[in-house]
Length: 244
Image (tube, rainbow, N blue to C red):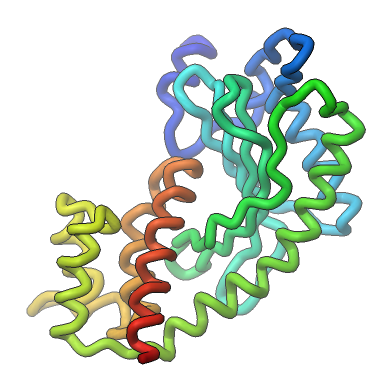
């Protein structure tokens, strides 16, 4: 299989060697599109400077390889893995950015508030030195955001939801494109169970969020981030209304 066909078939995960093989476009007077490989190298330098130890690495590439999303595991906490997420594009569609992601160990669901740090376009003023500095500053903010994201996630356990309300929220989630109708049956079993099988998630906003994020865990990193953003916004609205 050729490199091009590999890129075109890439979805959830991609090999790092393939990510690095995507060629860097020529610079213009106003646009310096740094390759995915250079962004990976700058990220590695920043992680080492931050005294973080990298474990598993996951990548997604768009068809053609123009857009890249990466996820590096950098430590564990109670039941979750801290992950640095980052993105780059060489087609002017995305600026460089970093964000915090927590992966729930027991179910591998990825959780993020999709709060991107230090976004920067590939302008002519972006040098390799600045690229490394940018990555370090962003990762410093990402590390702080791990605790913020974890506290938010754990706080969802405090919002208990009775079955009828949960069913109403399910319908609302489908109407607002947070839950794909095609995934309803799977979601229903995860959250409510069946006569033969117990539900996987508890009857709370934590469980509702867990069922939603489980349905998207096999999607590409970029898609997962966007869907997480919609899920977080939906859940926050529900929690806000429950507080009144």
